[in-house]
Length: 246
Image (cartoon, rainbow, N blue to C red; front, side):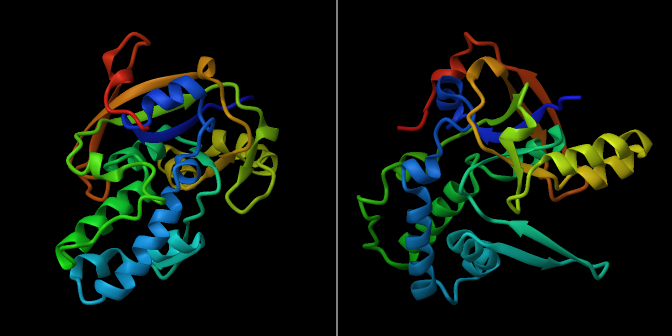
């Protein structure tokens, strides 16, 4: 059984994915978004150490800038490890997980989201703050007030050998385990088991094996009343041409 996989993003990246495929371009590397985040996080550690808004997001920002894991304690006494490595493009095993990512990240990218947040905070703290041109290839100022649309990308026909786990192992051992246990799980057990399973794609998935959906949602994924629906985007839709990446 071959599974479908899902990627949450925004309309900022839609046209690029439709043209080059999923994983055809990694904007975090090509446009130096990750290097820009590292620079901005260094500036945050200098200028924002007493800023409440910065401190709320400081741990994930630093983990992302350092490209490492972040361990979070949860109320039941267990720990959850979040992967903040962006050396590739990742897909979720479930549609719900990808939709949550798309709705939780306004700009469709954690790195871009934090770059813009840090830039806004630094501009308030340091009136003359400027972004270094050699790192700001993406031109993040263009998106400060951008009204993006959450997008769900469905990837079909991805080979198991073209996937690896977040810790760098072959995906096949997890997928074989899932084939055995999924039929035995209740709906709730399935959600709890599958919601944190993500894979890095090792080869771009070509456009002809992708489907695109616009997401509409209410509330926020962190709240219990969060709800979402999706509508397929047809190839001739104008959304493919609006406010795309450089």
